[in-house]
Length: 435
Image 1 (cartoon, one colour):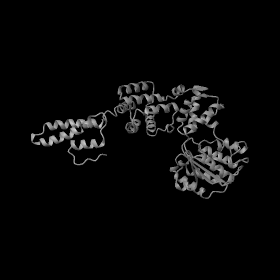
Image 2: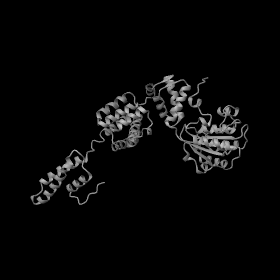
Image 3: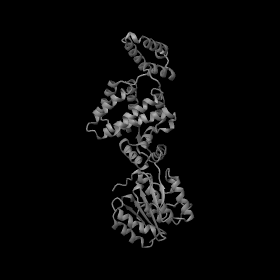
């Protein structure tokens, strides 16, 4: 029998103080335990892997621990040990995804009638509670309305909007938040030291980012990386193992887009594709790249993007090459392509077309002074064909054109007033409003 335990279980918090990023919830519950003001039902909501079930177990330990101090369980007594191993007779965990019917809730009702066998409180932790049927919710509502004093329910869910309002109104609700990349990275660094695994900062950051706000998911990636790389994890080995494009790829694509080099972009993408690049991952990464570029260009606040310092510096340098309007046009193309590329039967061809479009996004965007110059030329050509009887009108228009010729053809861009004046005269407009 294997004695190996995955990191998500091995390093699962056993006290409120060990829970990451949920201080509002943990401090409130600690205060309630100290004051003896325990609600009969709690609703913990939030994304996966942020600590909902963990907090529920710690609360059960704190309420039933004979050595509890300042709202924290001792984690050494028999009660804490049994809850930790999920064998305590008075702490019952139910997965509503598999036990979601009214008969399952009736079983809970029958079990709730019995007083605690060993503890002060009888706990029911119902995970993914939103999966219960409507009939099951109706049955649960009755016991939540008139619970015995020894009974505590903790409902956990990733979709609180699917829970009936009648249930929510009878619970103390605590929304849990996603963990920040820096917080996950710090926790991973602590665990890597405990496991005697050498890992560089870039690898820590990448694993933390792949967790997508969930420490449990990040620990899963960490375990996989340790299995592949051994006791030393480097960014090159990690990227190769996970088959994730390096950030340099997106900076290179952005260079092709900036220079309008369709041929270079397509050749580079085909090289990546030949090496087994996942197209959906590439598309998501490219979208995120221009999103980060927009943030840097708009705010100049590097801390708003989740990247290492070396990457932030590259974004700041690249931001000088793109205007905000141009980035927005690129983001519009990427946004329009998102659903189509996911549903496309040939994603590779679709991405090639999209890259060509990104490279040529400014091909048809021309300076207004150039357009006015062309209009001026067309006007002159038209005037040469005007009948001699209209000579006074022709002379008047020629005079207007010459007056604005310097501002139109000069090196500096024309002012708004000059553009308005030129357009009025070219089109014989009575009134022109510049937006």
